[in-house]
Image (cartoon, rainbow, N blue to C red; front, side, top):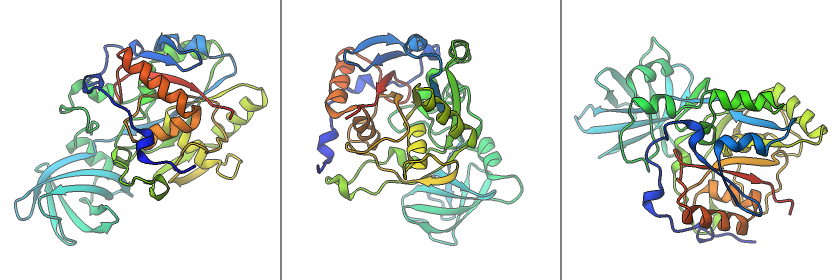
Length: 342
């Protein structure tokens, strides 16, 4: 079947886009997508999982990827680091009134002189000062990059709440938001009832917020993101499957990493790049269930969850969530989806 962008549109009231986190991570609501649909709290998650099930988390950490400054000509510039390239270079989005040319310099945050090396597709290749490594420089001088639909600057609360409690590998410019609902107490409860945990690392790029610009989705080119699947995670998944239990991906980033690493049908450990574009009709090789937030209209993530649990199921779930005033997107509520065997 040929899919178009309009197939993945829905009307979302602006006031349902969550602008700030709740007081406690587990206070979020959780929609169990059936049938039937069940309105729960995220703290109810342990009642929905069985001993021997395996949760797979993305342990990436959001870096201070946004920087402001001026060009050598004095014009204002905003830089969003997309991906570090070694210790002192990066690919980045650069917003300025006029496109900076190769060989020009940007003066960022009143402290960093950054050279524009050239273009790589839609991104700029930048060289940062020698000395401290790039991530250290960004942590000191940069700003936490909240998503574009959060209409405020990042504050002190976001420094902790826009990170998962298990974040440890810096490299993302956006949080793996399904993981934001877990706190240490909930993780301990799950472990205490025999639910396993495993980790992958997928560094979320700014491309995750880029709109799909083609009507015919067969023409869409997916952005790439680096990921790592450890051997221990491959072993844990194999043991879970052998025991007849479920592999539950926490977030679409965990799912994309695992499905990318199992493209030929067998899950493989290692580092690689994912450009996997999942549309309805895709055959899932690893995930049995998915915990995820609600996604933007016409987004590739909405296409992914539609493929996972079925178009009609997702449409009904989103209509229910809107009617029941669920909170949407990064700081919003969550769903638990089960793979559609069809």
